Every structure is written in structure tokens, then in C-alpha cells.
Amino acid sequence: MIQHNDYIDLLKNNILWAADKLKTDPHYFSELSSPQKPKFLFIGCSDSRIPLDVITGSEPGELFVHRNIANQVNLTDINLLSIIEYAVELLNIEHIIVLGHHKCGGVKAAVEGLPEEDIVENWISQITDIYHFHKKELEAIGDFSEMCDQLSEMNVIVQIKNLLRTPIIQRAFRKGRKVWVHGWMFDIKSGLINDLTLPLEEWKEYGLLPENY
Ligand code: CO
Image (cartoon, rainbow, N blue to C red; front, top):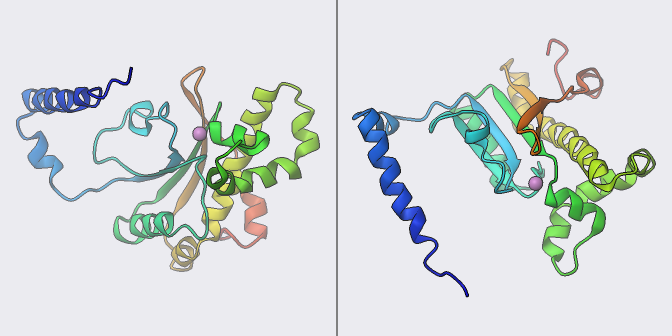
């Protein structure tokens, strides 16, 4: 039977949370009401198991966040592009982190396809391309789940490359602004984040990164 009242727990929890915050610090919400000054922009997957603030020990006000299925940086996504511009130009954020994760349903679907969900398939089609491009190397891994995890890592690298291609980031570099990009992979089995090595020299050769990066 559908428990249509399940959502009420969320509202009850909210009341408890607000009361608890006030108990520890009576000025908590008046301070939280001041303009935000987050230092990090996160681009992550919508997966419910990856709460970005929880896994990084961050508090409200510390992370500026965009999430979509399989952490895509799509160059025609006006939602994401406006978030990047807002982060870089208005919030002066210097660190942009693309966070992928192991056991990603979006990445798995990009390999296996989906029975009915054409729109999701369309959204993750770039991962399907990455898979086909690296098919030999990926299939040599043998284990399907491990192969998808490796593909997830490749996906993060490609999405950072897309991020560097945006006019927003290129404009920031031209102005001599400091913007650092990071690719992280969250391992659900251990709860730990792996800070991926990025092909920075290759990206400098492409002209995507300034020489002094
Ligand atoms: Co995911």
C-alpha cells in the first residue's frame, strides 16, 4: 500500500532540525541569512546516496551545487551554464569539483541502454560514446560493475574537459582569474573520495588551460 503520508516525516524533521540548531547557537539563522560565500562549486550526480555536504563534512553556506544524472557538463545546458557563471563571476568561487561515483545508475544505463526512458538515454549519450570509444580497454576489465566504475572515472575527466571549454571558464582564464578544477570519484563501498589525476599537460596543449596553471 502506498504510504502517502511519508513526506510528513520530512516536515517534522525540519522542525526538530531548526530547534536543534537554535539550541546550539541562537544566532544560527540570522547568520545564515547573510549573503552566501561558498568556496566550492560542486557538479555531482543526482543519486540520493551521494549527499555532497554530508560526505564532505560541509555546513549550509559552504557548497554551491548543481546536480544532474551522471554529473554531466553539457555545453547547451543553460541551467548548468548559468550556475557556473554565477559561481565564477558573482560568488568568486575558485574551486570547481566534478564529482562522479561508483555504482552510478546513469553510467550503467549508458552501457546497457534503457527499455523506455528515451530522454534519460539521450541525456547520458555522451557516456555511451565514451564507452564505445574505450570499449576494448573497458571490456578487458572483465567484471561489469568494475568496468562501469572505470567508465564513471573516464566520464568525470571528459566532463571537466567540457567545463574547461565553456566560454565562462575561458573568459576567467583570459582575465587571469584563479579557477581550479578537480575531478573526484566517490566510492560508495568505502565512503571515501578519490581525487583523480587530471591530464593537465594534455589540456594545456589543447589550449584549454593557461600555461601557468
Ligand atoms: Co550517479
